[in-house]
Every structure is written in C-alpha cells, then in structure tokens.
Length: 328
Image (cartoon, rainbow, N blue to C red; front, side):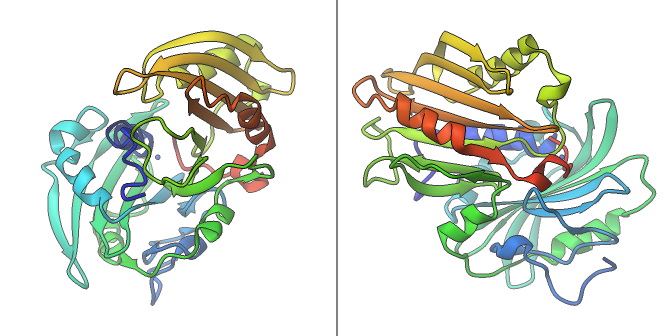
C-alpha cells in the first residue's frame, strides 16, 4: 500500500515483525526465488525451499532463512529503526549495523547477533535491502550448536540477494501458508511478510480515518503450541495476549469463547491513534503445531462482525505449514 501499510500500523507492524523474525544446496548457480516471489538468493549448504513460509530451511540443522517482502517505500520507514540500539532489545548484537551495497547497486543494511528462543541459542543475520519495486527483509537463523553454515557462507548468501518483478496479488495470496475459502465481500489489499494478508471494504488502499474496515489474517511462523497441547484456558490466554498486542490503545475485552475444535473468538473495543473507538474481533484457529488468526477492526457504524466471522472461520493452515519450522 503506498503506503498500503501506512494505516497508522507501520511503526507497530514493523516492531512486531522485527520481534517475529528475530524470534526465527552448495551455492546454486542462480538465485532461487521461493514461490516465484520478488526476492531471491543462492541458498547455502543443504537449505531447500520451505513449504510453509517464504524462504529456505535445513530441517536436520534446525536452520532457516525467512524472506519478507514490503512495498518499496517501506525501506525508508524501516531503516531509521534498524539500529543496534533497537535490535539489542531482541538479540545480543555483534557490532553495529553494517551498510552494504549488493550487486546491481542494491542498498542494504545488515545486523548480526545471537538470540535465545525457548532455551536454544541461535546465530542471527537480519538484512533489509532496497529494490526498485519491493523492500526485502531476509532473516537467517542457525542454532549455535550447529557446526554447519559459517559466517562467510551466510554473508555470501546475503550478498547474492536479487530482485525480480513482483507477481500478481492473487499469486502472492496463493503462496501464503493458509487457505481462505470465504472473503465475504472484502477486497484483498496486500500480503504481509509472506505469512499474512490485509483486506478492506471500499476503494481506498490507505485508510487513515477509519472510513473503511480493516481485516488482517496472520499465521504463526514455525512450530507453536497447537490445540492438542493446550488446555482451553491456555488457548484463551494465547488469544488474549495476541489481542492485547494489536496496534490500538485501551483494548477492552467484551467476550471470549473457546470452541472444542480449537477456535477462540474474542470481541472487544479499542481506540485508534486518533482517539476513535474501534470495534475489535479476533478469531484464532489452531493446528497441530501452529495457529492462524483473523483480526477485524471497524467502527460501530460499519458493523462487519458477521462477515468477519465468515472469513475467520474459512481460514485454515495448509498441511505443510503445520510441519515446517522456521522459529517464531
């Protein structure tokens, strides 16, 4: 969104994505573009294209590369926040953020460090790169215990990043790690980081004044607690924490309902950045090792609750997405 993402969501979405991605054969002759996306690279070692996210993985080593695509103008939004000070809140930095120039005069920023997730230490490389039509964010995650993948290998991989023209929005939607069989009259606007989707109802792609409702579908990346491992109360707690992390203020929960099949539906209210009261609705659905949630934000006058439920209840993780681990 030309800011397709500038719906007063950019700062918090960027922060959330940095949190997300910091939680995540010999070199090929040519870059590989996972799912036909706009960002590609030469995968190192035994890494192959992942099934459940945009990127590569080596299951035996627990290693992964996540590729996220954003609008071209996102680089200018992300770069000022892409600092050692900001990233230090998420990982132990190894030196300052580096400025790079990739082949084709591609401007890039690279951060390296170590992060602990669920008791496991990971070496991390996070790079943002500016293309003509897209901004790429590439995150590499290698367990410290792995003897594979040297720093030199990973840097060579990151230096191999290339761009190609983007496909259609429907092509991007088809590559998401979930299916959606009901759109309930909403219009798809943009995919998010290869794992999410924004929809709205109305002609505007940029919605700053709450004149159109907003629907966001987002899947977890990698292995997460599934319905089989969680009690009903634990499912509610996970869903509540996700609801409270939405980019709105003063979130108030009106009702919460946990279904036997694993769905958790929460209805509530919040206040947007301009002080307008917004209705909130979230449906979280669980699979054996992951979850996907549908979040709707709208004014009382718009009253899209029933349509939101139709979309949310039609969303399901793809089979491969429940087995593929890329970290969280």
